[in-house]
Image (tube, rainbow over all chains, first blue to last red; front, side, top):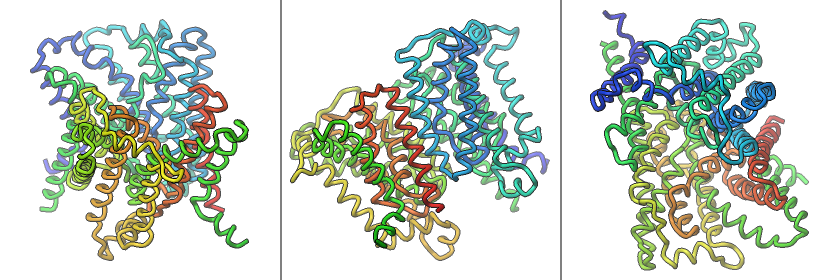
Amino acid sequence: MKNLITAERIRLALPAVSLAVLLVAVFYLQPRAMSYFGLNLLFNLSVPIALATIAQMLIITVNDLDLSMGTFVSFVACVTATFLHDSPLIGILILGAAIGVYALLGVVIYLRNLPAIVVTLGMSFVWGGLAVLILPSPGGAAPEWVRWLMTSKPPLVPMAIVASIIIATASHYLIMRSSFGVVLRGVGGNARSVERAGWSIIRARAATYALAGFFAVLAGITLVGLTTAADANIALRYTLLSIAGVILGGGEFVGGRVSPVGAVIGALTLTLAGSFLSFLRISPDWQIGAQGAILIIVLALRVLLSRSETSGAAR
Amino acid sequence: MSMVTSLFQKPWIWSFVAMFGAWLATIIFTGGQGSGDLAQAALTFAAFSAIVGIGQMFVITLGPGNIDLSIPATMTLSGTVALKFMDRTDLLVVPGFLIAVAVGLVIGAFNYGLIKLLRIPPIIATLSSSFIIQSAAIWTNRGLRIKPPSFLADFTTSSVLGIPNMAIVAIVLAVGAWFVLERSIFGRWISSIGQNIRAARLIGIPVDGVRFATYVLCAVLAAVCGYFLASFSGGAALNMGTEYLLTSIAVVVIGGTSVAGGYSNVPGIWGASLFMFLVVSMLNTYGAGAGVRLILTGLIIIGVIIAASGKKQA
């Protein structure tokens, strides 16, 4: 029993527990949500948010922060709704180049010792500008296969849940189990010792940023699959949502301590919080504020739990 | 000559060089026409960025991870509450200002409460509180555009001896901030906390008190900026603070303040604020569309950062 409850486990359990509590509250308020269709509606928008959260988590793993996530996902959405729909080859080339830019950013930030916050801040203007150039007014159309994928109805469990489990499992194996993941977390934890052990920091950072770009591209594509159209501002709030999701899921800003499964759960919790508030019939004036309050409550609980844990261990 | 070389070793000089470049590029294009008007507009708009930038700089100097994302929401709430209270009455200008300051005090204390008592990382703490503040602003504002008292509207849009009043206010604040940071014990404390918080604690600096005061100061400056900006732009609007989130961070970093904390730079804030405005107006005079303008702004910010970091290492 003593070994079962560790601070580490509480840390991982808390996101899951808060998601469960919110879900029970939603079911209590709106029993009809407890169905295939209801769950699909509740979690529909969580797929792109979960993917963006994983992308942000990768950047946070190497102790950086991506403030351009929202504009980048918007840019990808605009490319998806135009080029990827009209001429898939060019679309794929553009998205590939965008991932290349992410890899380049990872290298430049490291080589010149630049503050990632400011570089990505600058990039957010660039992505935003490109998005406006591609799609000056809302429009475009989703490629058939994306639409098919996002509206498909697997038996028993809704698409959004299946997708979240796939995302969580894949990123868990990639980051927590693979040797690449170990190096990646090592760069965040102690870059110098990783370098002494013979790994190239430049290559690891380039790969991390490229992978983050790849997940963000997936976020943009799946988002268009849900909305069927795009505009240059479609995903601006993803920057803050993705950061909040990572932290809510038990991640830390420094030291390479992250949890991919937690991040996906964090993204689901944030999505659910929105629906929960509308079921509560909170005045729309206070909906954003209540979202902030939920974030604060969950984080406060985390502190209380870990505090009682450490005092228990001291005894 | 040695004075020139020592001048070029100052971290803030590059923001002024960049600012001058952007100004020159605009003036050459227009053939010198309207250069006076451009300088006036630049001083006025840069004043608002400088006020919030100074607050952000204090917070960033506290060390890695310290940042205030609630600045835009604070500006909106203080502008809304103050203007609603004054209700276009000139007599209430001073009490309205005090109310704006009070809004800042409460928000700053709340932010630091979250950071200290709940041990939430500052970025998430100020982000969550900004959601709540924003809701409060929506609730008070009700989507109406509340007009400022005519005295305040005149004050914020006119100038003395060719210098806009807002620029004078921001310059006074900048000089005050410089004095606090460079000449007072409080400023030394902020810098030493940013350089090494453990060492600062060990030598007996009241770390929590200083951090508390810094977050409050930042929120108060944002609130004051919101009060003036709402008066300047003819009323408080819900989105009036939005662009200042990025601007406040950008001017701090372009201005030569270390993002890792511990080293602040007041003159650079002004250089960077002027630069940010002049770049946009330069691209406007060149007839660039919204998309191109955004892309170039981003590339220029990154370029300045890369250039500045290279100079520091040399």
